[in-house]
Length: 164
Ligand code: S3P
Image 1 (spheres, rainbow, N blue to C red):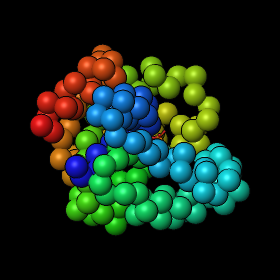
Image 2: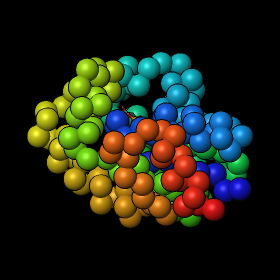
Image 3: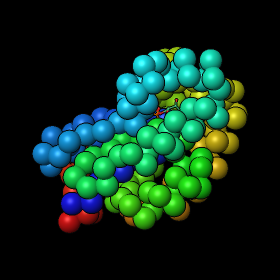
Image 4: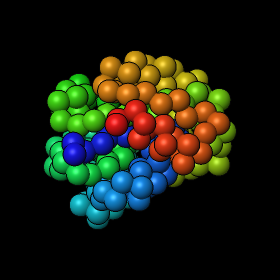
């Protein structure tokens, strides 16, 4: 099986859906953010604070290319599509699923989140970012699943039907 890459904005449920999907399909799970933290022995927040976003994006691109393109469920960071080379890589190597989530739902899910550096930006900027990224997520994805009002189980069931 080609690896399944989950893409989508912060708060779209990539991590929970990836966990559930890996249990149901009995396929190992990789989270690119976790892999960055393990590889560089620091937190994402620290990388942003000490080395800046560009360094984080360099790490992210490097880690993405090292993910196995077979037999894995891979949850990616919300900004993975910020680099065209990542879009190209994902399109040619994986089955890409976009978990599409509305702005209202994202705000609701992340209201108390302070761990994500990008989520600390101005509300108006983040909303614009979602609108811009939505185009790129769509361009990259093989399949799109709307997640609003759905549990990870519901999303996984939908996903399995789609990729069959
Ligand atoms: C980011 C999303 C985060 C993480 C980093 C940057 C982004 O991942 O990669 O904080 O640019 O949207 P999640 O989408 O898992 O929150």
